[in-house]
Image 1 (cartoon, helix red, strand yellow):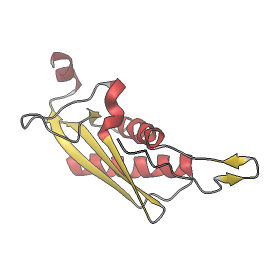
Image 2: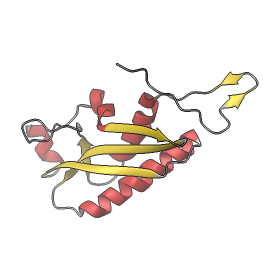
Image 3: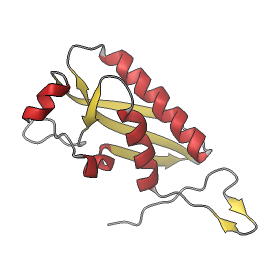
Image 4: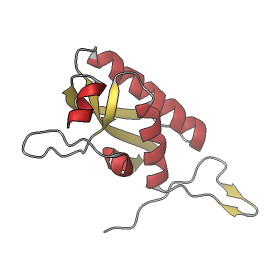
Length: 131
């Protein structure tokens, strides 16, 4: 497995040393921001299993986020499961702005793009208990 590429936030160099943020930390920020959004029932695997969504457990929710660094800017892809019956575009825009705001605030680096991938829809939170 290739070594994870760390990013250096603005003001990441200091006379005492340097600051590096690994992708797993970025994933945690994006997961927490996504899960606070109304209508998000959970994080999903980027890959379907037999054409079905794979809802990730809380311990593995970081797998529902992919990151890329291009031109010293961070691009984030999130994979989510949403509640059926709600307006998908509204929830997706909310996820985009929440993840962008949280990440930029915590890391101090620009996030020009947050891509939301809706992997599946589920009939409300109570149906998760039956799965």
